Image 1 (cartoon, rainbow, N blue to C red):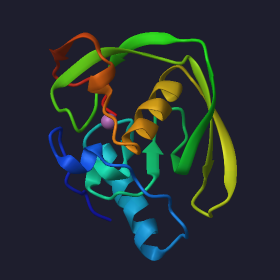
Image 2: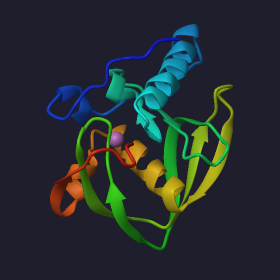
Image 3: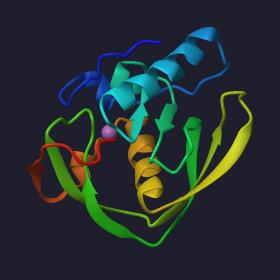
Length: 158
Ligand code: NI
C-alpha cells in the first residue's frame, strides 16, 4: 500500500471523463487500497480515482459510519430532497464552500468482486456520493458553490 499524490485544482486530469472498469485486476485492487490509504492520510471522507491521476470510475468513501464503501462504475439512480451545507475537497486544499445536494440518494455500482449493489445514503453519505461521482465526470464542487469559496483549516474534505 502506498499514499499517492493528490492532484489539485488546475490539473487537467481532474476535468476529464473517467472510463468504466471492465474487470478486477491486481492493479485495480492495489489502486483501491492506495486510495483508502491516501484518503485516511489526508483526513478525507471520500476520494475518486482521478484525484490520484487515474481516469477510472472508482470511488472510495468512509464517512465514519463503520463502513468502507467502494463504488466501481457508480450511477446515481435516485435523488430525494435537498441539503445545503459546507463542502470541501482534497483537490482544493484549504478551501470550502456552501453547496446544495440531495438529502438522500440511491447509487448503483459494482463492488470489489464486480458484483452489482445499490447503496442508499443520507446526509453526509449522500453528499459524499454526489461529490465523488461528479469527480468521475470531470466536475469539481467549486462550480456548484453558492457565494464565495472560503478559506478553511480542515473540516470535511472529499
Ligand atoms: Ni473532491
